[in-house]
Image (cartoon, rainbow, N blue to C red; front, side, top):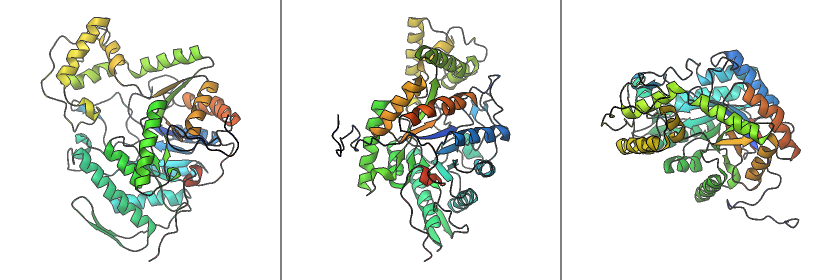
Length: 448
């Protein structure tokens, strides 16, 4: 037991914090296999009523923030519209402005792209959301190399990976300058050019809270220099510890304190009244996320040809894949999976033969699953309390699998368990997103 007044070290290098609070957000992606939108109990994913219902539910659960994912073009697979993903949602900033009128406290975070937007224009629109919501806006900063997205902007797969982070850095610096001063801001580089001044008054939190979701070295550096919150992919405890230690070391190099940046790993969650029930529900979720059509579409990206004639519950395709490597500008597959596809497929064939796997069974085996917490509300509350008190993370950004039921379970069953442990608020202590996240107060806008 620790003696009163001492602060034992943690695996992350930050002091143990017995009063640490779990910060929670929900990332409503809009595309991707995590949402089981075909289930009869699922609410319509393009209806404004669904979003109002969800955001009010989360505010009742005292969540920090509601995130909207956004795609600037409908997703494609092999040059055709990928109709297995939800599409047709309004612009995120517009939608969150409507949700601001239906809520009072919860933060509203818009995913917005630095590759294809313009700094002065986006800074103005985000500042408008921040002002209209009375200081509850956030910006989830993303970069994109998708060729189909770039085609909307006459660019195609514009900018190499690291250059996208260079542009993002310059873009964010320009936006921050516009939010912090009333004087004209000028930039003239090969990636960002502008001469502009702020046209929207500052909100009560000063400017939108900046979220960043990159895990590469360039992404971590951008987060350490510019972000207020990092949306990490490292939610397994050991990985979260290593990630937090690395990020805090980078913060120190830029003269920033550990509490100037919140770490919220992305995570999925399946709750059950018993551990066995939770495991069974998790199997059901995974089976519905990787259904037959999705399994076929996944292999089509690697085979480079139409596989719709194959039975997803039958053996792997008996034809050879095209020799072309995966197009790095398609953007639906992790960067480290975009080369060496023939060797990868050879190993998949060996694995399928060894275990007698069908197409769908193979995809379930090799397709990376979202980081998943499975258990009873009590067990998850214990685990998450350990995360925040040892500073492995400051909370989680949750990816729901079924709307609204999976979120209702969290609010009604998990939140009370966290509150019982003293690791979750029992009421909002402030009204701005910055206050919810306990981030440092910003200096007032400079008029000079």
